[in-house]
Amino acid sequence: MSIVTLDHIESEHARIGALIAQFKQQAVATEYVIERVVIPLSAGARLAGPIFKEDGSLDYYLILHAGEGGELNHDDATGYAVERGLKLPTRREGRLLQAAFPEFCAEGSIWLEEEYEDDSACAWYQFYGIGLQFSLHKSAALRAVAVSRFIPSVI
Image 1 (cartoon, rainbow, N blue to C red):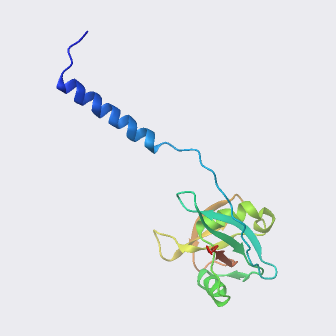
Image 2 (image 1 turned 180 degrees about the vertical axis):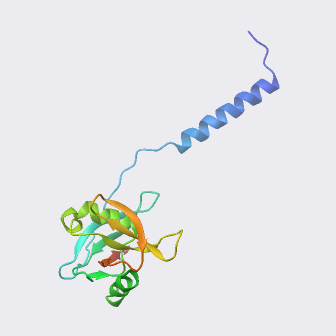
Image 3 (image 1 turned 120 degrees about the vertical axis):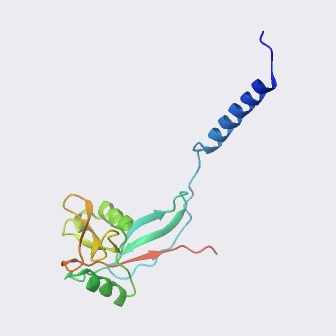
């Protein structure tokens, strides 16, 4: 049997502390309960699905509204959505639209809300031919679609 020293005890204490911290960070099994939610949709609007926060809780539901602004540059596409009280989809929402409505998305690429970080003359768009997102000069003409975000209220 070896002799126990204070250094040995402190070393083991630190090792056990690290194991406890690692254990606490592991994913734990949870349940996700979807409450009854009534989402009002205007004529022709379609529910794309939920968007979740990083912690896994519901952030909002994405709604794709009927109609298109046609082939517009990015500024005009943004204006088209704003005039309707709506927004262009974000990059994350563009991916959800593609997953939810592949037939709609096959009709052509659409502008997304965000400017391209490395060049303010460019913006992101969803290229539906292969399902990726790229940047393009804002003067290019692409489809403009409008979305809204429905946040369920707690009553």
